[in-house]
Image (cartoon, rainbow, N blue to C red; front, side, top):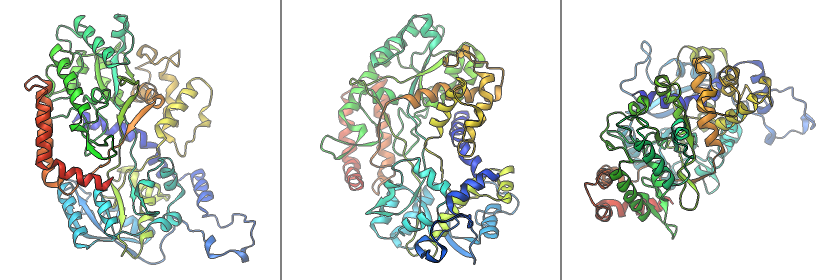
Length: 575
């Protein structure tokens, strides 16, 4: 639970400036939005008014509809969510604000419990061609709806009604709108994803004590882990590389998080293997990464490392990986840039625990590989909807409401997907890069506080106001001894995470590999659970020595026979 909370916190931290900006009502924000959106009718025009044409119509994306405008939606409901008073998903403080301030009236065509129930309800609506005005769907459903000709082309209404802020978010995520554009028509609004790749986090104080260099290759990493064990750097029961705990996975997959928190994905990536995602083979066809020869090679290596004790002997059965890290029993784990948020207990127990991230291990060609985070949710609008523009306005209003009442709504309680209809995660693609680069410049006195873009990158500015109390000279050395952990305890982990994990990630040259499929196909709905169980059990048994590496070939054969071949055909259709 702690991991989940902190992981969520780290994600929200980077997106915080967008959210904060969305609730901002200061004059500079209004002026910027006004000048960009054309809401200021007094703006000087070089063309005389009498020569204006309909094509030059200026639309205020924050304007109220003249008449009540109804939008029917299908809604995912969390049955355990507690609303205030008598509020419901359809009638709550947020939906009432939409109605009172903007004349947008939300009606639920149907509701279903979040998860499988909702996905089944969406699939039924698609197959029966009985769609509400708008829905949140996954990638497979989006493609089905496009193929069936069920969706509205949002190109024109997006151009006219999307706010400058919303457009800026998509512009900062290159290629994202292209991924939902078919035959030149925009058919969805996709959620945004923050980039993430697994790095190798190592106790640099242990490296220094043993006079060891930072790793580059798999061989380097194996030798470092062995040295930590041989020298009992974490005591008599030193763990070489700790990772997947009880109930966890060896790597992320196309249906789950790509944060690679406490798993062994980098060991696969360095073998040019991409288990759990769909990649292209040498002929350009889709193949499931878990059945490739590269994955077999990675498993053979991990089997050898496990036998030598380099990999945690309690791999897959340990109750808590975090406890091993916090107790100082290990000096190596894999995790994303924000991992430092979860190292507070380790540093509390040992203030000299100098956890540093490394872009390693590299593959044989010297590349740093990672699968790529992909969004899994999309807002779509039925081609029968009377007011598709209302959906665009709703998306804009959710993130960038500009009146005092909106500030009141979000001040006491964060609006969640249970209050906000058609909820999407939206954030600028360069939030982390901006924060890291400008923090570094600020600490070197190359820029001043007033040089920060407080409107679009408010969180970077907020961190900068605390950074100099925390970061000691030399400002470009990020070892733990050059941070004052007690000067500002509320912001220490933020600054440490961004300057360590953030800067290492931002500066990295990453070979991104994106899964062809990011949602279930039709056959997966009935077969995938058993296929994934077969995969997980086989991989764990091979690594832990229960099965020989030859068990991999038997697994591939079973996987294909039990639905894998049919699923591969369906994924190739997506390609």
